Image (cartoon, rainbow, N blue to C red; front, side, top):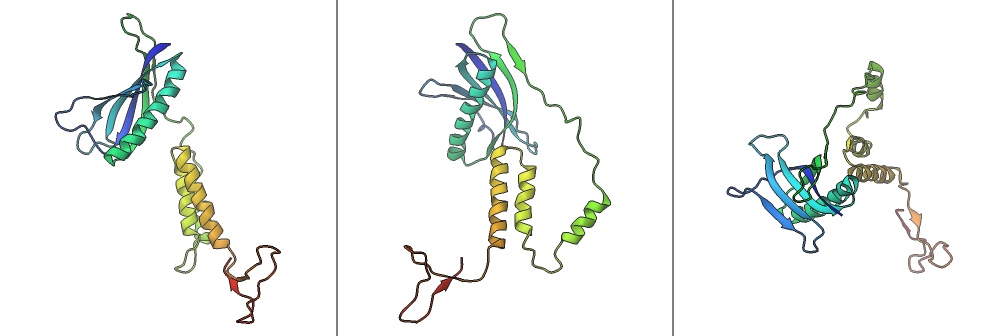
Length: 207
């Protein structure tokens, strides 16, 4: 097994307290270590960034990256609970062979490059005309909420948010499409209509 350092940039709304230069954690099981320093925390920085390094053992760089992401995710989940601030992985910077005492190290650098196929030149007046046709005529817009969740899902940067927002869109749309007429109560055994002897009628309820 080789010792590796996995270097991340993390978005957040907090920075190290004044007088603190480095925060360190060694997981009591020995699975990993985490070190935290300020990276870009000047007032108005967009977004503010912390530098977080995960140190652990792995067979190769790819395994180190995967384990590093899992370890950092666990650390950030607990840190969010303890601090009350959001934390989001912004960028994986590098994966480095962290074996002590060697002169030459394996290092994988990661850089971001823009999508060469973006933006797609596809917006036309007919798209706006279709929006105009779909917009409600009155003040009540039943489709606004599910469409809002749909847009957030399409624009989500990670799969967890995407799944959650798509689910909200479907659930909200299902509520709109749910029939409003009342249905009779059913017998749990035969599923026939229940009759109230006192009222001499079949009770009904919204589905």
